[in-house]
Image 1: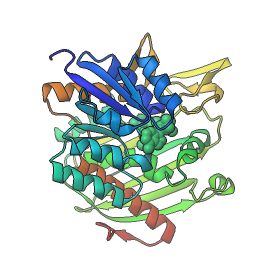
Image 2: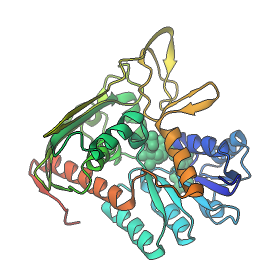
Image 3: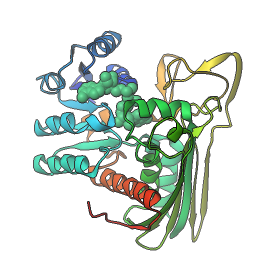
Image 4: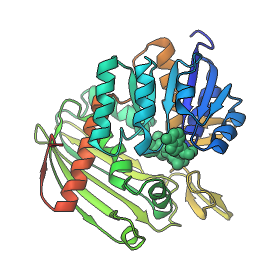
Amino acid sequence: MKRKELGVAVIGAGRIGTLRARLAARHPAVGFLAIADINADAARTLAERTDADFHSTDNNAAIEHPAVNAVIVSTPEHEHVAPVCRALELGKPVLMEKPLGLTLADADQILDTVKKTNGHLRIGYIRRFKRCFARAKQQVLDGHLGKIAGGTARVYNTRAQAFEILKRNPEATPVIDVLTYFVDLMLWFNAGNPPVEVVARSQTGVFKKAGYKVDDLTWAIVTLADGAIINLGISYALPSNYPILGQSDRVELLGEDGTMIIDDDHRDHQLYSEKGSGHAYVPGHKINFAFSGSNPSGDWALGDYWGPLGNETRSWLDHLVTGNPTAHATPAEARLVLETTVAIERAAASGERVRLPLET
Ligand SMILES: NC(=O)c1ccc[n+]([C@@H]2O[C@H](COP(=O)([O-])OP(=O)(O)OC[C@H]3O[C@@H](n4cnc5c(N)ncnc54)[C@H](O)[C@@H]3O)[C@@H](O)[C@H]2O)c1
């Protein structure tokens, strides 16, 4: 690897942009770092923290900077299109946060730009970069399961984090914003076997009472082209002090020749402290009892960042300089994931079965 050949712009200096920028700043190939955020304080604070070379409240000033040759877009879900498309138009590779957008129209604008510019875009589905899920994908590729008949994936989290996400955008529902990771995993494991039908049911409760048009619990059955059936479920409405610090999940795949069960509930590392544990995503939130490994992004420890978001960021930067293949989601994969989550929402709202592909 040549040293210092990358100039990286990080657009959006919030929770995830901060992690991306701190990781980029310490990557051996990065010789220039630019930060942009509409909030001047956020841009300046992160620039100071990472010793960045440039910061601005103008996204384009960072993206267009001549020293920048790679762009990470970590803006909120409804603010992805403009910075992603600008970078692609300039021929700069982009890593963007999931989902592609909150609507298929936004997603298609991005996909049209990728096509028009022959652009290099990858989408950050960090679950792929957790060791157990990468290993599972390899085991599927190696044929351990044989033909997959179906599976299940469900994820839980507390309402404390859900309210933080909804404050940012009330349209970023648990299905569109979080179940998306598990739809991506299941479609990745079943690559080449696209979803054709969705049935779903949901239940309202605490979010509705708080004024959001968001369900507490959604359960879906997704049928794939070859008839495989995938059960996907989410609740981000668990009580605020339940010990999850991000995601508690379980993923199962059932094949003709094998069965895979991935217990990712994080009960393997429990911490109880009278002093309380902080929450990386919810400022000021403290719980006495925690499933310590349940922040899906990872953890800072001993001066470095360990876990999926660290692996994913480093892997993308490595990919840019080495040209080696990468497991990051492609635009077409992310489009199919968004379409499936939109179908789940429509199926839950109507009670009707929804066929895919959707008529947009
Ligand atoms: N990969 C992961 O583990 C992971 C986890 C959580 C969230 N996300 C995704 O990351 C993205 C950001 O989430 P977050 O939790 O960091 O949000 P956040 O609210 O913490 O940060 C968003 C930042 O973007 C800034 N911003 C808003 N509009 C902007 C614009 N038009 N231009 C520039 N800056 C703008 C805000 O001022 C804020 O600083 C979302 O797409 C979310 O779904 C990914």
